[in-house]
Amino acid sequence: MRPITRILVPTDFSTGSRHALELACDLATRLGVQLLIMHAYALPAYPLPEGVVLATPQQAAEIVSKSSQALHRELEVARAHGIDADSILVEGDAFDSIMTVSKERDADLIVMGTHGRRGVAHALLGSIAEKLVRRAPCPVMTVRGNVRE
Image 1 (cartoon, rainbow, N blue to C red):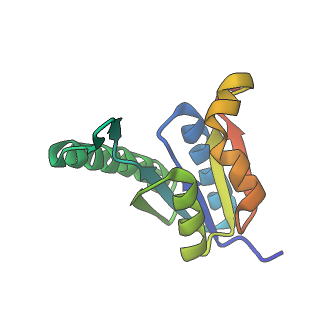
Image 2 (cartoon, one colour; image 1 turned 180 degrees about the vertical axis):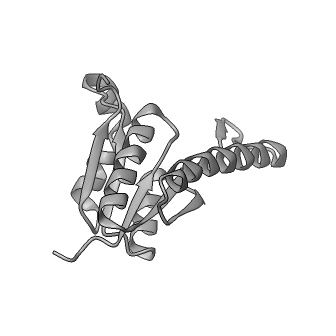
Image 3 (cartoon, helix red, strand yellow; image 1 turned 90 degrees about the vertical axis):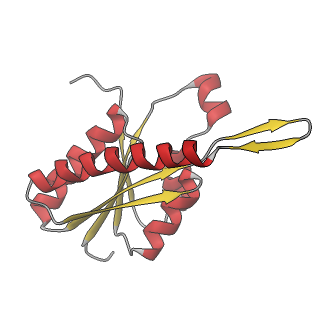
């Protein structure tokens, strides 16, 4: 197993993602490694019998702006720990984007939060974290978001 030099932290800005970021910051500090914090967003599309209606340019700009601001706040959390950190905002499916970024940026570890869904919600929505554990090119550490402090 190769040494850890870069940790990828995908975020959806949830409580679980914040817990994962805090853990990743602790690991990065202890190991003296770089963090890459990423967020993948998808522009909404509304299916109609006549075709698909896409987000307006104004809606798209607002989504990008809000995502960028939230990602910047996460980056500042990491930098407040004195960590060498960078961020990336990607348009696309979360799973596919995380896989692509982890390969392109040569991540050695992915640290991410989970929503802890069970039963029907898990069956219908699936789990990005679960798919990544099975398919990612590097180890994946998951952090449950609903764990009591």
